[in-house]
Image 1 (cartoon, rainbow, N blue to C red):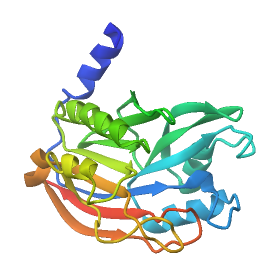
Image 2 (image 1 turned 135 degrees about the horizontal axis):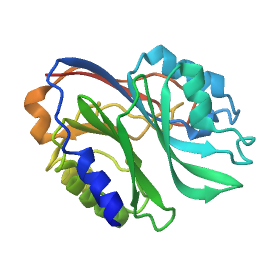
Image 3 (image 1 turned 60 degrees about the horizontal axis):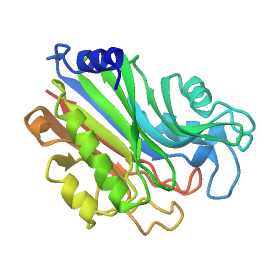
Image 4 (image 1 turned 135 degrees about the vertical axis):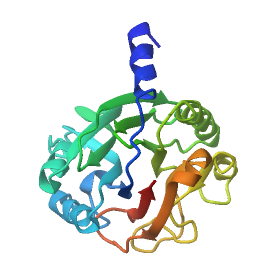
Length: 248
């Protein structure tokens, strides 16, 4: 980490936290590049799922940026335009003439963002963090390898601990609620999304691998109003998850 980046990173987590109560609708969605369970690329269909959720902020995974596979389209930009939202993209790898990674869509503009590389021996991974006046939001898509997931968790924990604002993370964590990884995660995090409802595959879900969570230290400031898996069977191979919280 160079000196300039270290300074930026320090500033990200030392700003004064807002104190006003805020209602936040948080969504996580592995969009599979807007290619549905029917294998049809349909960005408008994905956008309609997002708009219908009325989410304030969304973590999206499996996002192409100008790849030949997605006809050269900047997926995050296009979704943001269709949904009237801001977008922040973090490339994990170069792929098929473009880039591939994760993104955050939000109704409000972030005051700052930072991208952190995460381990992935089968495919490099990334953590995208966006700061807003009242909270910090992170998106990720973790490795298929357990050792890499555990190493990623240690990195995420070390970053989140520095936050002076409520810190949320959302994404496709590629592990089930009974796994060693999730048990380790629960030492420091509260999962805010349903763990008794499956999210993958979308048409006949059999696994829970998508999550929204916040640090234990936020518990007194976060009140969950609603949490659900959205019954969307076609737009992706994952079902989106949505949690509504009040930050006090």
